[in-house]
Image 1 (cartoon, rainbow, N blue to C red):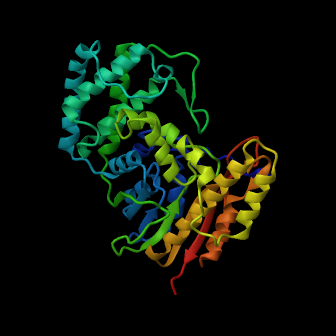
Image 2: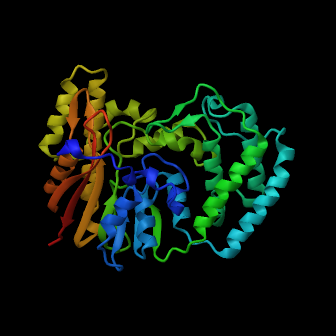
Length: 408
């Protein structure tokens, strides 16, 4: 019975925060390590694992930590950089060098606080940080660049920049009580000593986790999950992933501060472009383009069209636009499920962690609709089960949709 399903925080990011590399940087959409571990519990060590929606790199890291080889896909350059930083093995010499250079950085940066240091072009930046805090962060960043280079320049120093990203968000006025960020009414003026101590504690947490050797391997590749292509003749034995949900929440919004500070984006339109390329993304440019969007694939399950029509015919504000959004989401997921087939080993298992949604009182049964797409595309042994309840007040659940692929 759905009424007895619990929220199960152990299957969310909340349980990941103390689990070494999994807790390096908070990103709300991350799903639980325990869930991935359960899905991998009976997998052979020789099996190759794939997560076509890498995000925070949870699947790849769990697989690599247990000794498997894993590949993950993403189109966001920051998430590709972040995921590969999580997967990397760091030598003792490298970590020692980082600790020494950071101490030198902290001796130098204070002399630059009053200078005109670079700051990101984040809209309305004053609601994120007080001018005093912003000056400290900018000065620290300038000194870090002097010792470690820009984030994109040296992969071995990625952990330093991950610590800095976490510092920026923990000294900001942003609140994470919902998937989309909100802001406190007032910004906080942190003392320079507090910021230094916080940065060192964050860095040490990250470096301690980086000391642990990963026995398997994983790599994030820049691949659009709707158009996968050949994977160098590698065949996948198991897919474990959590794609975006059809809930019109833009994950790029939460990533923006990190991406600005690390210079993976420089202006707002770049974030909008990434949202347009992402499955389920709607923010800025992405929303404005929905009305002119055209389908590539016409042969979709009938239930998708009937669900979209119910949303379109409702009396909600922008119901037509949101109907197009839902159609595009399931259209893109259908393209993905079609595109992934050539790289699957015969007998491969797939597990998709997805959530349902409501639009103007119309339920969007994501698990059922993706299952229908799988049937149309020739998958077998398709079934789904509820993983957890997502919300106390609404009938929102997380599901695991599973299937098998046979090329014969």
